[in-house]
Image 1 (cartoon, helix red, strand yellow):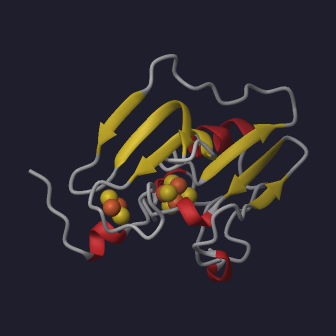
Image 2: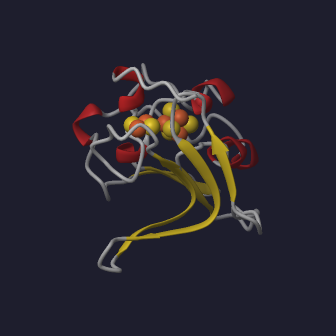
Amino acid sequence: MEEGERKQPGVAREYRSEQIVVYWEPAYCIHTARCLEGLPQVFDVRRRPWIDITAASADAIAGVVAGCPTGALSFARLDGGPQEQAPADTEVTVWRNGPLFLRGRIRIVGADGSPVREATRVALCRCGGSDNKPFCDGTHRANGFRAP
Ligand code: SF4
Ligand code: FES
């Protein structure tokens, strides 16, 4: 992953083929490694760029991207293939000693009503230590957060 872009909300990198474009927003990536395990030929942090958009089918890439629990990865199909569909009912998954993973049509607004983020997947900090609240930034691993 390209370290220089980390922790800057709103910064997204694009990885594009004729079939699909994948966006990666490093500020929301907490290194769950699900993408690396799902398609190691596409997602490889030892390589630059770390995403090889040509190394698998658009269907396979879309499937793994949709499994990114933080929404750091998202995609748009350019070939008429199915776009990501959010579940009709919002799902909240409690991650052991870590964040809340939300999946749905999520819209987060600030105390002043200003839009913060719209996404189908987000990870919300549960430990109180994130520098990117309300989003988890992975600090729960360093601060020893333990939930009952
Ligand atoms: S699945 Fe998402 S949060 Fe996990 S390492 Fe990949 S981009 Fe980061
Ligand atoms: S739960 Fe991950 S930083 Fe707080």
